[in-house]
Image (cartoon, rainbow over all chains, first blue to last red; front, side, top):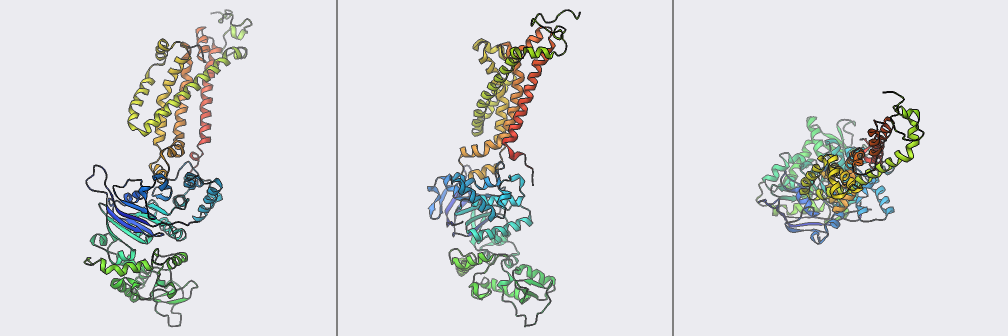
Length: 391
Length: 238
């Protein structure tokens, strides 16, 4: 159903608008491995949307080159190129005069797919995003909720199985509760479709949650740092990045780890507590567990697995230990097996990350591994590349 | 004035007493003169209107599409069509007789010139009402300008376009009643005859009523067509 994902490479990309002295994008170079989510994040004026629109040539390049699957986008006819790149924007831009089904069918129709193939594809996609095709395909966008519209926008962008997806603040107009829901849903979807994704946001928390890699841009379109979320939080390249990710970056880092990643303290045979408010599941983030520990005055919490069996205890000391490990060498990457041995180092670092995603992380190896090998790789190089950084 | 004196001079050899006494409305007369007077006038009226609106729509659409792509065309087009719109209709009809002649062409030129302003403005407003993010999505998904125009912009402009057509059609149906001043056609002819005779109430009410009924019918027809071709505009939020 979804076969394609391509590596994206930006080579010294620049954009200077006529009549403006300062370029909007300056010598931007970065590579997004196939199947990874790269989040472009930065304050307003950092050119993140411009950078995204240079990729599908909706804004012409002033210099440099963009390679999709090793091929320069400049060689391509722009319309043909865009039909190969999924495109999702904040206001979604569903066609109000077309039904949900017709909206999803837009690109396949532009590509002149046979009718039956288009119809089958529409059904498949609506099912994928959790909308009943029989009930929803005939509705108009005005009849959908904000979240449903956003899902249809994503389905429409995925319709022709594009090797690359561009998403410009796709959840920016959604209320916080539904946004978190849609973010989780998109991560689950991404675990299935495995697209290369360029995701623009101004929200660092969203960037940390969604990105396999984060590119932080500063004003004037200069790349401040391009790395995994963990590395950006543990080793911000400079003051700007440190300030942008926030003074609470240690806490943010804790939300990237779940209790399943920790080596819990053995419960010593006897069940320490009856199940209740002093009990948490393995899938709880360390961030939330810390909050509960603090609220309980530091008394240990019991951690249960899916069956409700207590697996161990988590204490303030354990969290402290994790933070000091991170501070010293970047978490578990220094060889401390903080995760179950069968995951061979691939930490499902997202809350609610699906088993499929963890499988992918294990199977894909170094190239497209969002959490395991790539993170370790980045960390291994960290001391060398960040000499003199103000940490 | 005595009631025995016939107002209508021997209009038909067998004039009823209703006609002779010029009562408010004589169904008899209408029945007898339908095929010879009223129906031909109505038919001509419909054709005059259809031709004027069709030609006016074609010209306005071309101008609006041009002004949609090249903004600087908008002001001169508005200026010219507003100027045409403000010329008193009787004067325009007479002005055209000299160069064109007292025929259907001068009638149509005048009628068409009155449709341009409203049609041009409504088509352009419709095209410009398409939300920016919708155009952005169309471009980002790889539509060409023509594809975006045909598949997205024109369909979304339909409500505004039909609104313009409704105004144009009703305006032209009313205006076509004075075509008789230069060309012998339309419902203006029986209205003029009735007025000239004293007035003859039945013919005046019949021809005037037909004009009003035609306008209402045309407007209703356009509303139905719009509902049919813009089903998305009827739905309400879930």
